[in-house]
Length: 241
Image: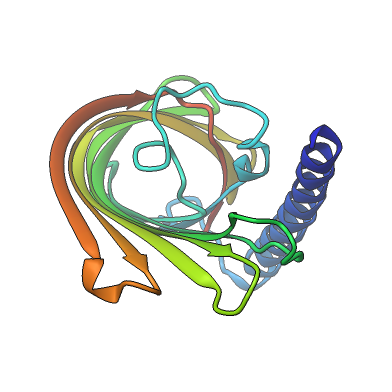
């Protein structure tokens, strides 16, 4: 099992590194094209800022947060619209899909599982100068997050396989203050990191089904509140246009 886990982590790490390389290359290429085609002036305000999460690939290896899948920093793409007066509207999108399917049908009670997460945030921030190449910002976000996981366990052998399915859905709505810092590399490229203190209202629903006894399907519902803090361990590559 240890060798399998190490193999899976190595494969995930390599895929994440390739994805990161492609994203950074695309950003740099886009920045080069933008810098050539745009007519820059000293007073021109670059109103649009696109960012990409560059630390998603280390998520399985580093765990600095006390927050799990609902309240950490899972946003792969971010956007800011500068309104003037050092204020900005901000947004973020995230998506995570995981799937595990067993290749063998000779083992009893072997589960197949899938997981999908959607993340959305919108907010407002105020920026302020810290030093020549450093900018700080403070603001607040409203966040919506959805998670669905399915686990199917098949009991063999035949004549009729029994499939037990457990479906879990989580819906979270929250808000909280955000504090971040940005390092300016060039006029159009920068790096940023931020932390947040978040309050969430969560609704959880779990459904258990058995293929042999569909009338015995059960559903459980629960609601909860939680407050969590995320450290500024996620680095974003930012391009301004």
